[in-house]
Image (cartoon, rainbow, N blue to C red):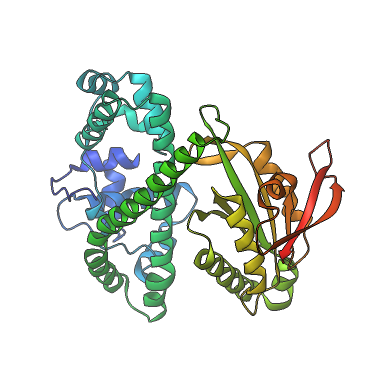
Length: 398
């Protein structure tokens, strides 16, 4: 987290940032719409002015905004004071000269991180320090193409984390305080206390998880290199050979209709937790798509053994899962997997019934004869989007 910045802003700066006149800001203060204002302009008050300005642009009346503020719906306390960055004071060209990075590359990095391209119009001291780190990483030998992809993954992952933090705090803390009838000021004070207790742990927690995950993937990468050296065919740059499993709940739509969204989502949570808890060590849940999970693994045999075993011990109270597995070469870009082989795996699961594990010939060629596994040829099946039929096999315990 950025350190709190206590330097006072001027009324003109606050008004300019919000895109309104200084007179408008004075009027909003006079009407009690900026409760954070205490005679001086700090970041929390300035941000509140921006919120009011955006609400006005969306057509809300001052009375509606006042009611929302009084009820606590706009209560942030001093939370944003933890997050405020330094004021922009450098131009893009100045930042380029300071860091040795091309202006076009700086813009690409900002966009990849999920920051508006407009952010490069006024680069802060904090931004400049980040760009110096980027320059050092590139100078140490990281290719630009790889760094931009890493930046995009960071931006997407951290944006998802930040969104979850804000939305979950609102649902489980902010809204219950409102239901208890607290005033806007009381809620702001509560939110401020929560922020001071919780936010300092965010960075250590992310560092902990990142360190553990980095160790895991380094180990997996070393094993993959070892296997490649023992006869596995080499892949082109930007490509990886992986086992892909898609698993979802058969009859999920019917479940939502019969039991409602809340019960259906609870079933998905139990399903995903069971998958995460039982996966082999070299496999992980890569993404969730509604009631469907995408699992990526290095070892297709271990993945089939897991899938067959999982069907035998699927969690109670959820529709029977169906699983489709394929093995092949995928394009790895921006932290995601692309290509024909991924699409094929997604199509395989669509042909499975609840409780079944369907696999392709590429998987059977590697797993046939393995103790505990049996494969029954279903036949050549036409998969949506593929001109040639695909051999599909039903995998089961022997």
